[in-house]
Length: 165
Image (cartoon, rainbow, N blue to C red):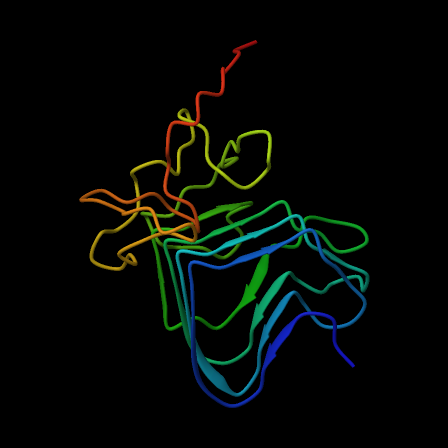
């Protein structure tokens, strides 16, 4: 029994999806084992795996991760965002950057609005995605434009006041 998305065979694409605030008792929030999976413009955040040494995203099979935020996930002891064998990793936002060699990946806090999912104006994920790898619209149907944002949500001004310390 798993708590999360488990892909064991075949080919699948996850686009413009949100995997957030889950508590997983076994495996990971997204487990890919024996499948070929592409994760594109997703936001995978604040998931807790209750097994030490497990990760929120575990890709033990070949796959692709594009324009995706993987941040703030943990196991019972440490930050545990992702591990795996990706064929292509391009223009994502994750911290820490453990094992990431893509020069286009942002290793910083995505700086979300108060809902914890939409990027603020000052987010490093705003308009920094790879347009050749992006989906045409976001999770809410907003057009991505020429320079898309990383994650499931395109930046849209919602009138939130940002306060700097």
